[in-house]
Image 1 (spheres, rainbow, N blue to C red):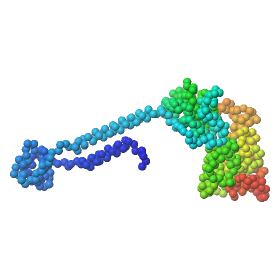
Image 2 (cartoon, helix red, strand yellow; image 1 turned 30 degrees about the vertical axis):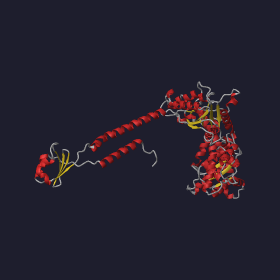
Image 3 (spheres, rainbow, N blue to C red; image 1 turned 90 degrees about the vertical axis):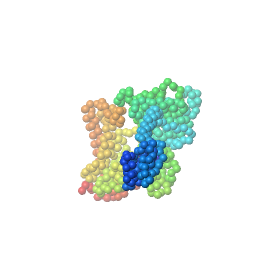
Image 4 (cartoon, rainbow, N blue to C red; image 1 turned 90 degrees about the horizontal axis):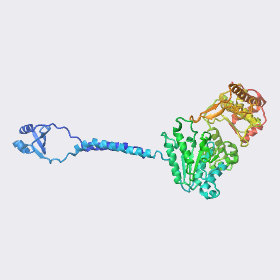
Length: 610
């Protein structure tokens, strides 16, 4: 049984029940004995019906020859022998010393009072505990890290060299402030880390805690917010009071958007608990005391909803952006996480860095861990490249679903669908190269085609978008071309293509008809969380033209995809048949298949369903 499972009240109740049980056991109630007058006892003795009499003071316990017992009372000045006379010769008379006090009756009488007293004691003790908790309710829950034994250092952080440089400077400022003060530089008040989830914001904060030889206070933004008004502001005051007493030090507030959202958007006005907490943070960060060496470090992936007062100079003086790593950053991150793991000679981290474009640092850490798990499951002594390749698929698309049973016709349709994506991507000059085709179900997908960008891309052109639309729609075009039918497998492709086409028209100004302008203004309702509304700054006629332009872009891309597949139908069939046989094709084998001549003229025949 786990320690601390029962409350003190429950233990007190168990003790009381045990006391009552013991009392009943050792002090059992005596049976009720009838009372008789002394005259009746004397008459029975004269008739020879009394066997024995036990005398205890003035009380008599009479036992008859029939075994019956009676109680009686005599005068204190009278002797039992005088009362019985000659009849006492045939009666056993016993004299019992008189008891000075009846403890059993006393305990039975006091038992209810003991129970009530124990109950009152427990209630008063609970009230005192609640009072102590209420007194500590406004205390900060921050975790304090003090010492020079770091668990994470800047050497464990890779792929964000610029951000790491900014924070190394902050640590140096805390260690040797005189170097900066000699030139009139003042210590930064706050550093805000901004970036998508998984890019290493919290890891950088842990590295600062490991590198800085000063106290490090760590707390989450959600720990300030409570149901009771004023508690968050009280905790902020207590946190900064602790930090000031430990200065110089660092205060790290993770997920600051929990309390730093734009004011004036919630219910309750200025009396909203979250707004009071934010107001207290603003005052503490830029109050009257301007000489306190306390640096506030915060992290968020939602800078768009933060209050402007937080972002002005004097509060968060520096905004450090952490983006998804480029190819060099991905390689450095893979090296960090692969350190200490037995890797086979076939593992090429450069190739893995090229194949993982768009993945964050957390994704890459998960990828290395998944590869190690796969190698251990296969009883290998080292992690090989095949485990890393499969781990990439697991991270991107999910684990294999080999137990999923599908019909041969459905499997064939999936094969032609994915072959259509791959062939159109190969034929279009501005589409990303094809790295892998598979009809093995993963996650929610029946099959997938993985494209591998030749280089990291930060800008997109209209021709690249048009080729991407054609690749997205090629699966549906292949189904219609080969089977004369379409399936639900193109649902996500159509959604992705429609969203991209609408962005081309409304956000990127890539419509010849509507010209270089944007349409609609998106803003988030802060109080409602993630709900995003669009303020239309255009009329119904323009809305209709936007829909028409989106349709034109999608229809043109579909025509391009269908035209390419019709012209290269034999190659489409060749790829699909190979895919049906092998289920997965990638790398050099896939490139050989693309370059392999078509050998069967009968492959040009249509294969409609049924």
